[in-house]
Figure 1 (tube, helix red, strand yellow):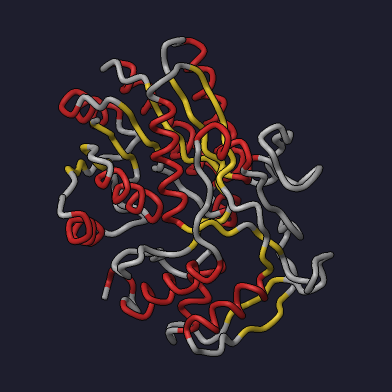
Figure 2 (cartoon, helix red, strand yellow):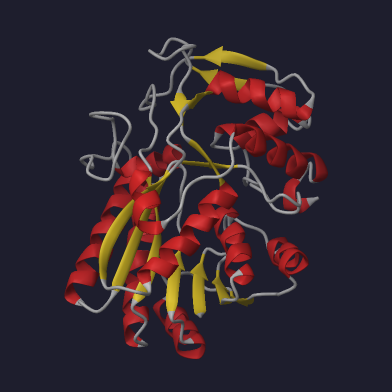
Amino acid sequence: MRVLVTGGAGYIGSHTIVELVAKGHDVCIVDTFRNSSPEVLNRLEEITGVRPLLHKVDVRDRAGMKTVMESYKPEAVIHFAGLKAVGESAEIPLEYYDVNVQGTVVLLETMQAVGCKTVVFSSSATVYGAPQYLPYDEAHPCAPSNVYGQTKHMAEQILTDWQLANPDSSVVLLRYFNPVGAHSSGRMGEDPDGPPNNLMPFVAQVAVGRREKLAVFGDDYDTPDGTGVRDYIHVTDLARAHISALDYGVKQAGTDVFNIGTGTGYSVLDMIKAFSKASGREIAYEVAPRRVGDLASYYANPAKAGTVLGWSAERGIEDICTSTWKWQSDNPRGYGA
C-alpha cells in the first residue's frame, strides 16, 4: 500500500516508517525538518534497506501538498506533522493553531482531491485534561487544559466531521500517552531541538554528560513517592499500534478512537532509578516547584486497542531505559554528532 507519512522524519514518525517498510508498504515522507533531522533518512535506509521518498513540504502549503498528493496518489495517510510542546503552546498559541489545526484542514482537502479516504491521526491523551477517573478510557470526557491539547482536540473534531461528510472514508484517532525509548539498533531515538520538554531525553542527556542535573517538578503529589506518575509507552510499541490502526482503517468506514498506552503508571523517581540501573550511572537531580497544569497521575486503559485492533504493549520499563541509553550513549549529540 502507498502510505503518505506527514512528519515522517520525526521521533514517532521515523519509528513507524520502520514498521511500515517491514510490512511491505511503500512510504512517502512529508516533512520540513523543523523538529527533526535529514540524517533520519540515512538511518532509516540503514535499518530498513529502503530510502523513503521525501517531499520537503509544509503541511499547511496547499499548492505543495496538492503536488505531493497528485504525484504520489497515497492510498492512506498517517498524520504526525505538528507542534507538540505544552509549554511552548502557551507562548505561541496562534502558531500551534495554525500548524496543528489548519495543517489538518489542508491535509484533508488535498487528500479528498485525489480520492484518498483513510487517515490515522497522531493525537494525544492531553485531550482528556484533568482526570475525572483513572485509568482514562476512550469514554472519558475531553476537556484539554492547555493550548496543545486544545489543538489536538480540534483536529480530532475536524477529522470526525470530515468523515461524517464522506461516509466511505475512515479515520482512526490514536490518543497516546508518554512515548519513550528508541530503536533497538541504537541508530534512531528522540533528539529534541534545544532543552528537552519530556522526562526521558532529559534523563538521558544528564547520564551522558550533556546536562548537569535533572529538575524533578514537585515531590508532594498524592502518589506513592510524591512525584508525578505517567504511562510510558515504548516508541516501537507505539509504532506497531499505527500499523494495527492502518490495517483496521483500510477495512471499514467510520471514525474510531483508541488509547495507546501500557495501562501501568511509573513515577518520575521510578524512571530515574530504572535509567540509572540501565546506564550504570547516577542521575543527578533536584526537586523544583510544581509546574502549573501538571497532573499528579494519569495512565491509560488500553483494553479497547487490545480487543479491536489486536494490539498491546510488549516492552516495559527495562526495555525503555536500555534502548534509550543505547541511543544516547552511541549518539551523545543526537543526529547532529
